[in-house]
Image (cartoon, rainbow, N blue to C red; front, side, top):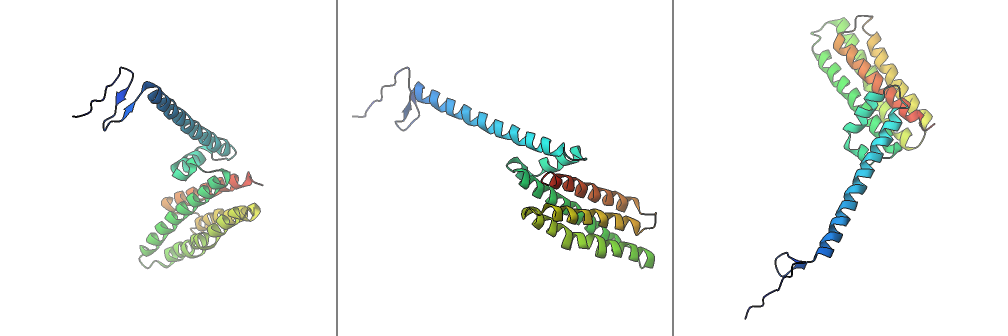
Amino acid sequence: MASITKLTSDSLDLGGGLCVGPKRMNNFMKLFAMFLFIQTQIALSQQNLIQQLCQKTRYEPLCVATLNLDPRSKTSDLQGLASISIDATTKKTNETLTYLISALERTGGNRTAFEEYGTCVDQDYGASIDRYLPAALANQKAKKYSSAIANLQDVMGASGDCENQFAGSCPLPVSQRNKVVHDIADMTTDIIKTFV
């Protein structure tokens, strides 16, 4: 003889003989609502942290956009946000270096253009990627903020030196990329200065 489960009006059959009463369901809903509330509060407080940090820079819109673009920013503290900013500076510097290498390959043997682009590749952006930015990240993590700032100032200087290689006639795409690298490095410097 098969057993028959009697359901009352205040219980719910979940199948397989599992029944949940309204009190348990109500407690589950309260717990779920509390979880959602906490998650929302964490997200809002993180957004406030980014906003407060970026207000201390001269590049607030760039700062907010840069930090929000990286998913790590959702759970990062101030140190983590500074690391994300250095990583973003490295990415933009690397993109510019890649562009310059491509432009160098297209010089077609023009000695002046080869020297201009070659100097930007080897001395300016090459040094930024190989030395200045890794040192900035290491110094920031070691809490040697003055050294990290000096490294980032070297990156800004390298973008300016690249610009100067073209003796006042820097091609627009190079000039725009130099400005992007300068501004994001300067923004990152402002972020790290908040620790000093």
